[in-house]
Length: 288
Image (cartoon, rainbow, N blue to C red):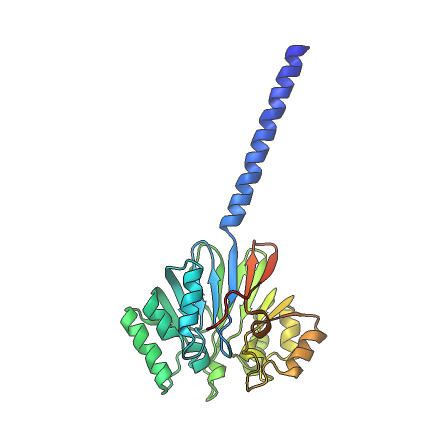
């Protein structure tokens, strides 16, 4: 009987040991597949960073003079190389800081819509890309950004835009297992309507609101189709455009969407483990 009890105890300990190791391995695997999304605080502008085990993707770089802040944020996060830069459209408050970022980091790929602009800011961006030694890839619907850690697809623009540069905005959808993020750039209601008409799946857990919360974006039908739990708004405190506009804030409230604002929370960090998303206010990442 004693031998039998000893053998049973030993078997029990072995089972517990291997179960513990499997739990630790599961936790390690889950940590390795974590995806972090940062809505950088760049004042009245736009810059979002996505970090996975294999990717470092920067969407826009804020306005002129904000590139140094973006570089500082990235270096504080331990970034050494950027796998992809997405310039959503040529407006200065989105690409103004990208020349500084391109000068500070090695960048593997650059995506931008095929639209020209004549400003010095846009020329500085093009020159920085040229000096980086990369060729701009066209950001348009159907373009997939290669990744081993998540799915990245540009779902707009579906057609050529108009004279309104916002209509050329690149829209990126990221899927990390069960969690989905949608980054709208400055895409207007025209783009939203095109996406809905085309039957493209825009459902997302987190929606990066278009055009800083201006009333030219975030139509009720689009918000209902996306049906996000949270909305990220990048805007400067006390900005002259009154972004985000009350009509957009009311629409978000009507749809029971939690609002995260960089003008109030500083840089906002979303961490996805593939099933849940946690949100952290990073007030240590504030512009100088």
